[in-house]
Image 1 (cartoon, one colour):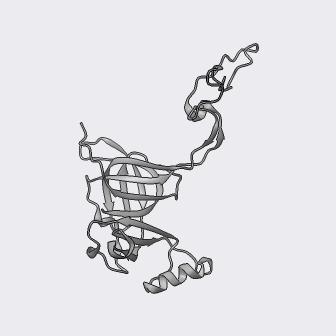
Image 2: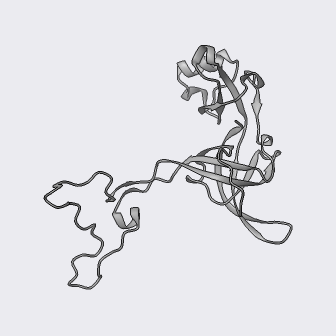
Image 3: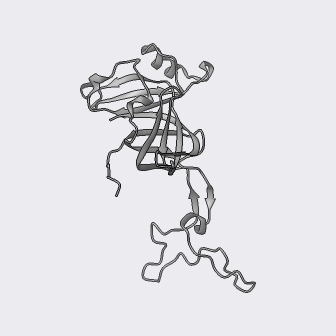
Length: 212
């Protein structure tokens, strides 16, 4: 499976040959190196471990520093694993760039959504509010959480107030609009999860669906 790591730069727009406006998200990648190869015989599965992002040496722990020294590579900020079909296609120290993707190809993007802290049920789940007149006394409250005496408790999974955001989100079947090898950037059609400078993973689509 083809995959790279990158940081979300932000959103902009481009024009196609027909003059239509296409909203795109710019993802800046960088130097991604294969740090370790995992095999079925030794680890139970085939995968490559890659390093991405610069980090100061003083901020690297000794175990991580020793891990990179085995591969004769400079320490990186992030370590992630990619499952691959053929482990023999990769070598320790091999560089992976944005050129593995083609314009028009469908990809999936995995990131961490923006954290919004503790929120009420109106913002978190889109519940309706009560009347805003002075005598209402029920403006943005959740309402009853309980059930009848037959149950006598709050049912699991009830939509209520609580922590919102800061969770893993996967967006499927985004189209690659442009691949800029010189700037190590990929332009993807539409929005992707996470804040600016957030870490994202771009992989080839696992459930490709033809657009209607």
